[in-house]
Length: 295
Image 1 (tube, rainbow, N blue to C red):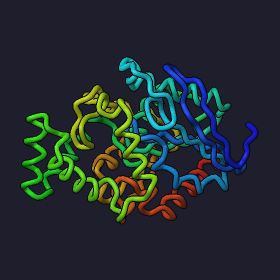
Image 2 (image 1 turned 60 degrees about the vertical axis):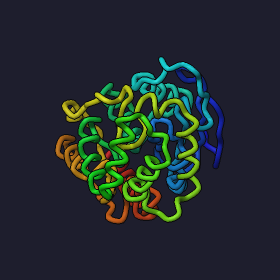
Image 3 (image 1 turned 90 degrees about the vertical axis):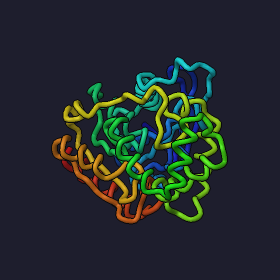
Image 4 (image 1 turned 90 degrees about the horizontal axis):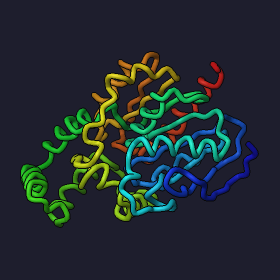
């Protein structure tokens, strides 16, 4: 596949067109990024563009958010359709061999994709993610309960009464996010754009819910913890010390996926690629190089 330094366009996927951008034209095997949310868009992953000096880095906005089409059709918002979208992106861009990195919800999507035994996956990186929704919610609730008691009461009352649009609820949620989503002060512009993507997308609330730690959508029962041992690609698992998807969930995946590596970013929450960008970039560079050498 011939690369230029930067190019972007739209390509066809199940349900509509998705926007993509390719950063860099290094000679290494391309890196395909799966963003979080669902509905967050690619923006907050932009720090990973620095890897373009070694290899093409492929960003794309999943259908329903960012610069991609946003159809008014809730039947499209399933994990199975998003899995099919990955194949559409790979086919449309000629990505026969790739490194695959999924962050947060993108990690769930990557797991689901890998269980279909796709060809050409040189390595898999699961960044700040887990193998199940129930496990994720269980560990997140422990973090919620570390907030001041009045905030916990506000969260519980608002969710019970359906007032999650209130300023009191959003204030408590943002306190949680400052501790466990991104600890940078202030948040970088790409993180703020991601927040707008989520607000403007129908996908997040339909598939997830009113906040990161509360799931009311169709992902509530998603659980592949009994199947991730089927993943055989070289796998790197990363997690922030203060991550909203906490360390025990990363440890669980590490124990289950044979030969996987686990790296903890001690100064990060859920956004280690932005909170410790140099260390994160070097960690994945080294991982990609070692897997390519082995291949």
